[in-house]
Image: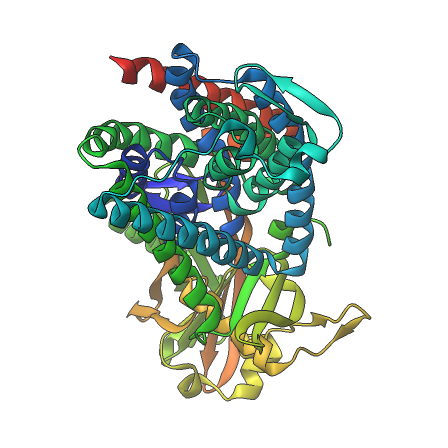
Length: 313
Length: 251
C-alpha cells in the first residue's frame, strides 16, 4: 500500500516503513540502544534523501526515548541535575551541528559528511566495544575476575584538576561541570549531523570518563536525548524543512512493537554476548557506509533541486 | 468505459466543427496529490479537424510534448579525493524542467529532420537550457547536461522515445501520459504538433495542473510557511506518541 509522504515528497510502501521500524525496534529493544544509528542508514538505503532521513529520525528518537525513560524514571534511574548539564552542552552542540549541516547541504557535501561521521564514530565505538566484550567473554571462560578499582582511582588526575566543580548527588560525584558539558556538546553535534540519539557515545563516556554508577547511566542518557533530539528536530524544521512527522510516527509505531519483542529476547542472552553482537552490528553498518565512500560509484553524477537545498536561491 | 464514451462524444463534436485544425484534451486536467498518490496515468486525446488544407487526406504524424514547471536544479559530479569519492564539480541549471516527456506516432527521426525539431524545441537535446556558473549564464557542459537527462530519466521524470501516440483513425489520435510519484507540483504545458512530410502543419497547447491537495497540501504549507511552529508540533507529537507507547508498553 503506497503512502505519499508530503515533506519527503516521495511515495513509500506503508508496510515497508512499519517493517523497518519493527526490525530496528526489535534490535534496539534487545540491545538496549536507541537504534538511530541503524534507522538512519536504513532509511537512506531505502531511498529517503539523507537530509530527510537524519531530521526525521531525530523526531522519532524523541518519541522512543520518552517511552524508554518512563521505566527508568519509575526506578529513580535518572540524575536530573547531571541530565540538565548534559542538555545544556547538547543544546549548544545541536545548534552548532545543525548550522554545519545546513551549510554543507548548500555545498552538496552533506551526504559525504553523514557517511564520514558514521564511519568514524561507528568504527571507533564498535571496535572498542567489540574488543572490550571479547575480552570479557574470554576472561569469563578462564575464570578471571578483574580486581575492582577503589572509588578514588576511578578518575584520572587531570579530571580533578578542572575548575567549576559541581556535586551530583544521585551519581555520587563531585566533578567539574565542564566534563558533562563537553560530552553533551559532542552528543548534540552527532544528533544533528547523524540522526542518532548519541547514546552509543554518551553511555560509555558516562561510565568511563565521568565514572557514573551504571544504574543511572541509561536513564540519564535517555533523559538528555529527549531534549537534545527535540531541539534538533526544531533546528532542522527551521533550517531545512526536512522533518517528516508522518514518516516518524509510522517508524515509531513499528519500533514500539518491535522493541517489546526484542527486550524479551535480550533477557535470554548474556550481557557480554549482547555487547559483542551489538558491536558486530555497529561495525557492519560502518563497513557498509565505508564501502559507499571508497568503491567507485556506478553513477558519478547526482541531481538535486536547489529549492530543497535551501539558501542559495 | 466512461473514458471511451467521452472520447466518442468528443470526437463527434470536434469532427463536425468546421475550421478547427487541431483539438486536444486530457482525461484529467487537474492531478491531486493525496496520501495514496503513487503517480498518475492520463490519457491525452486529440483530433485533427477540417482546415482549408485538409490534412486528413494524407498520413500525418503527431508529436506531443509535456513539460512540467521549471525550477533550479544542480548536477554534481563525484571525483576521487585520496581514497574516497566526493562531489567535486557542479553545474547549476536555473531553468530545468521538472518533468519533460515527448511522445510521437513514429520515431522522431522518421517524422522530420533534427533541424525542424530544434526550431520548435522538441526533444531534450533541443531544450534551450542554460547553466549558471556563478559569474553569469553560459552554455552547459554537455556531460552535465546528459547527466541531468539520464538521472531524471531514471526517476521517470524525463521520457523520450518511450511513449507512442496511437492514431486511431484518420482524424483521431491518443497517447498515455505517465506522471511518476515524485512529479513536481505546478502548471504543466502539453503541446501537440502535427507533422506532415517533415514539416510542422499545426500545433496547439493545453495546460494541466498538479497540486498537493487536502491534508498533504496543508502539511507541506505548514512545514514551509511556519517552520518553527511545525518543529514544535513535531516535538509535541513525538512526546505524546512516546508517552502513549511507554504507558501501553508497561502493560
